[in-house]
Length: 215
Image 1 (cartoon, rainbow, N blue to C red):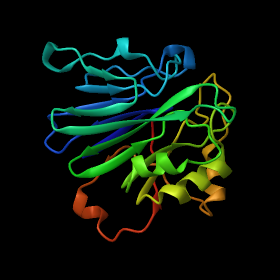
Image 2 (cartoon, one colour):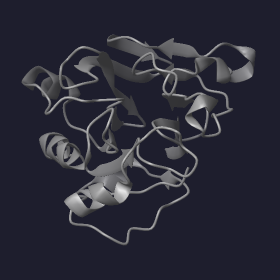
Image 3 (cartoon, rainbow, N blue to C red):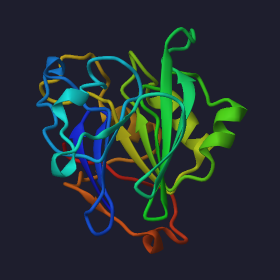
């Protein structure tokens, strides 16, 4: 599996062999960032905000249209299992957000979208289950900030944590720096990587690790 990050909450996940691509939360140019321009088999959308739902920018593979998932439920597409779990975008529980759990190459990935609750509810934890790679917002203001993000990490206990949805050069959305999250995790001096290439065997016995990615 190869994971690339376009910035914000948008990841490109390519399975081993490169014949299937999942894209998460494509964003619009109104963010101030360059929108993703790529093809994908599956596109997940956590909620209908311009910085997460720019599906029109994504083409399908080999001339087909990508399969769009933008609601809770259980999906099986081209051998990929995806579960969408309802959650909330804000502490007041007024706006919906979908958490996605997907299994690709036997690796379980959780993308929290624009999660804004103080903590995960028991029924959400049950649906999420055991997670290898957690993609978690850490920039605050319109979602969870560093301290709450650490609480969620401790609830899920993944093997790999990839922070997302934080301040980047050029972004027009007010977000905190990823350094706040790293500090809360007791880390500093982590060097960002261009991509993450990983196999299931790499995760056996692995202790929890934070990985920063370059957009």
